[in-house]
Image 1 (cartoon, rainbow, N blue to C red):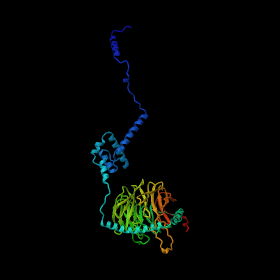
Image 2 (image 1 turned 135 degrees about the horizontal axis):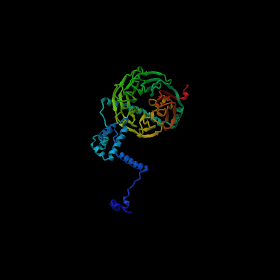
Image 3 (image 1 turned 90 degrees about the vertical axis):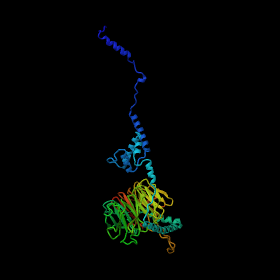
Image 4 (image 1 turned 45 degrees about the vertical axis):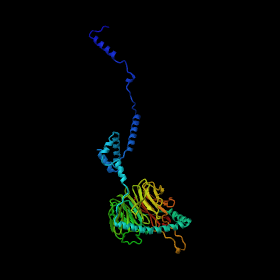
Length: 513
């Protein structure tokens, strides 16, 4: 077919282009295509997250919230976000530090930050060692008086323990089984007292076992009679604001005059009030704590008062001068529990840092650390034998410590939640050793032979202090049990509860006696 002359140049040009064009693609020219499945993306994200976690573990992230804020400010980040707490803020700082580490920016920022991180923090930690503060002359005199008092008390206690060691074991065993274990197994609910506006934080028997002091979260303080639980006296509830803790003077209702100090109480206000049994207003107010006073205890001599506070300190007060003798630090968090040794030589404290400490009042040193709980310590007591210490924790356990061995000798998985209080039975004095006028009769004592614990799991449990085995569970509280105590005549157990009631427990065959 003939081609028009005007079309001929175009056909020739197309033929030349076709000859110059490649006839196909080589293998090297084939584009590479990578798989982009969901599984591949997840694997990549997992590897990246593992890498970030590894980097996060190697970074020194400040633990103090103040240091966390300073570091965020140094990085040009907001120091706090809406709804963010301390833990969230620290996690955010960790993520920022990981990002900067990956991008190679962390070292420069660290060098520019003057806030002391890494090696600086290690130096600060090394500097946080035990230190001593000079005390006043009054404290020195108190230490000497306590040392003299404790020597006489320990001599009396050791004499009784030697007597027990010489007593044939079958006699002691039979007494413990018949008069202690078998009797405690028969305990049940005797009565309930209502009449409080808020949860009842604490209940404590008087030394003569005929009264009980009750403190509530509303600030109410009442004295009730035992066993009929009728109200005898009430105190001005506005003094301690709320969440009352209290303790009886060791000679109150015995040899102590009703017009002098019989009771001490504290609360969220941080003040400590001293009460007699004749007035509805405190006879003195001790000021010094900066936060809630959770628990307190009188020294066995009756001359001093120890208080545990949420300001992370415990303090020793002279009741005669009504002055603070000692402000003792040593806990990382709030101090909740305090108890003096029966001899008066030592004092034990328990904190929400899960640490218990034994302090020597004669020297001012921390002599033993009770370290083993996973969560804060809420209950603490020292056995009348002088060497067993019981601690109850928010981890649900009760630990028994032997001061002679300086270690935990037994752990009772006592409750399913917070252990709010623990109490050894104590008659309040060293039992009397039989004399010739007793015609050879043995007079055993239940002193220190059993332990009682209360818990937020709504139960009270009684434990054998020889074998640390379970004796009895007292049930009947519809809500959390806040505290527990045993009367000095060992006839009653009293408990306070979140349901705004006080309950009295006794041997069932005594109900109709």
